[in-house]
Length: 202
Image (cartoon, rainbow, N blue to C red; front, side, top):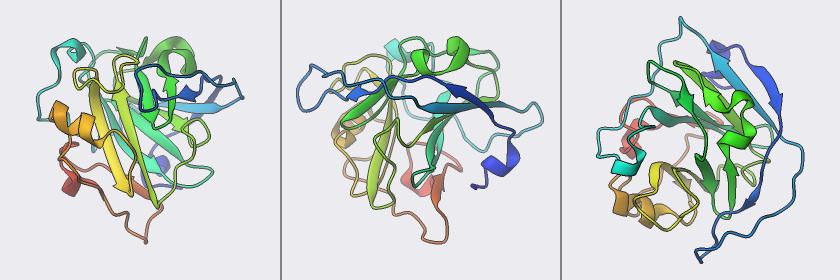
């Protein structure tokens, strides 16, 4: 159980969409529809450790700058956690979470299609094609336009990484070629500062 999990009270929600994350081309290839689960959490007393990015968010993403990946738990029972740092509920309609070559439309997965103000949602490892300490990535997009820097607004890469580092670097939200080396003492990486700075992840 992660440090963040111990602070929140999860509630389970089932439904998902998995598909190929655009591959090297611009056309994603849909896959099947296995059952997957997500966890949505809200805690009015919880002080979020995540910070809104200090880099420029693409103009098309101005409606959702308060959504941020703030925790990745590794392993078969792992998940990518997204926090809403804003003061109002955040719509997930059309918001894509991607780890090459898999993506999930959060509006289809999360019950109600929103993350409440101060709340979090957890997208499990199976939905993301697995979350291994050896290498991976998680990217947030406003559209299924995976090679377009104007469509990406959140990114983290660890270990050997994935395929969207250059897109994130072009968007100004991640340093080119940068990757986090997970601390073997923990089974996760968690955000404690600027999400665009790999030094803020531990």
